[in-house]
Picture 1 (cartoon, rainbow, N blue to C red):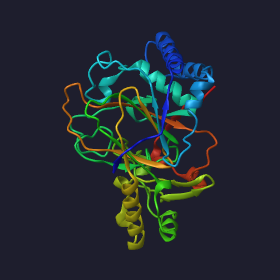
Picture 2 (picture 1 turned 180 degrees about the vertical axis):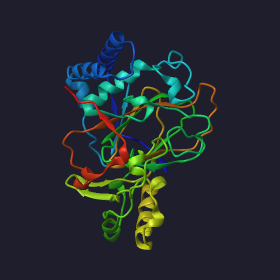
Picture 3 (picture 1 turned 60 degrees about the vertical axis):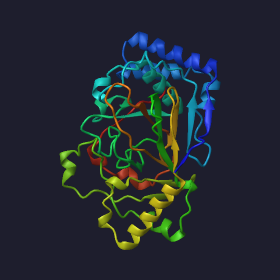
Amino acid sequence: MSPAVAPVRQLDAHCVDELRQAAQKILGEFGTSATSPVLLERVAERAGELGDALREHCRPVDTADGLFVLRGLPLDDEAIGPTPAGWANARDRGAVYDIALLLLATVMGNPLAWEGQQDGRFVHNIVPSPGHETAQTGASSSVLLSPHTEDAFHPGRAHLLMLGCMRNHDNIATTAAGIRKTRLADEDVDLLSRPVLPILPDDAYEVAQRFADQAPPPVPTLYASDEGMTMRFDPAYTPLDGADDDYRAAYHRLSEELARVSVAVSLSPGEVLVVDNDLVVHGRVPFQARYDGTDRWLKRASVRVPGRRTRPPAEAYEHGYGQAALEAHAS
């Protein structure tokens, strides 16, 4: 894995002022970034008024990297206060940044949230949490967060993932690997394009009881869409023991290829990493959390892009383990 020279889209002063003023105005009106239908309507209304220059920065991912960094948002390390001890402690910390991310997400598509995750908020706080150091979730720290598709278990998962950096004193890297930079044999692509194994929900979700006793649906790992190869990948939650030797070998070779092309993106405060969730798996290197208010702190927003056809049609029939996706629609 090598440090990335990620494609950068530099926001100029005018774009930054436009975005900040819009976010501050919405926050002043509602007094919170906790999402409600009325707040989301206002965000959509205001996002529709943002200028062409800012919209150009929010255009779709347009390189094989499958990602880019938005740079230029100002952030005051002292003003944002200590890193929360967990997402539930964050509440409205960094609320202006929450709304700025929501505005950007709404320009890119439809913001997405989950009824059962972080109180249904549309912007999540990603911080290390005591007791979760070794979990395969964003609250972990001391283990490698394995490369994965965000919410790979669900057919309503995001097309785009946004990671906004609030604090990163230790230059802790997000890892990223794009399927279109790999080299795979045709035989492996064929095997991995078959629906053989399911992807189970990660530990941040509870499976709805009515689905707990049902056989989980098998899903393809790779899909040759009209736009090119896409991927649905989460080895930590894929029961590989249920596949035959040939499939497991092909899956292992895909994992090795993703490791070969993986890059490390260390975000600075005010930068937003935008990842195409159909093309790129992301993770995080291990680090030692201090829990002293100076640990890494990211904000996460998810986006669905209306009309995008980068996934197998059969996904529409999956139950999603009873998890309800909440989608805000642009006005």
